Length: 136
Image (cartoon, rainbow, N blue to C red; front, side, top):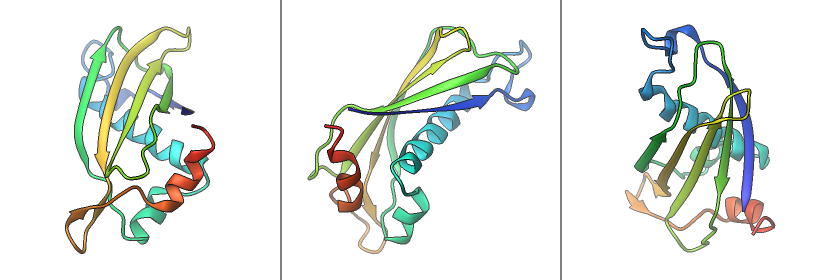
């Protein structure tokens, strides 16, 4: 299993009238966690795109347990629990925690590897597989 953590401070403009992180922003926190997880492997989403690999989201699920509040420092824990070299899909599991270590939210985002030229799904890029293989 591969796991990465990143920290995001809840900004005022991301909150609702109650001072809670608006539910629609959780997807952005998942995205930032994914991008940083890939960066921590030694490359970026941009490099994948430059290599002709896009990763559109095809499914997202979220569970809310308690709110993130304005100015909270949220820890985003992003994990890959499975690695399948031949699959055109990858699933990122996110857990968001407040500064007290309380679980706020869990999310699962499924993406596909996609070649924009052929408009077809493709297997996991070799560079990504090579970076992840040692964790599994």
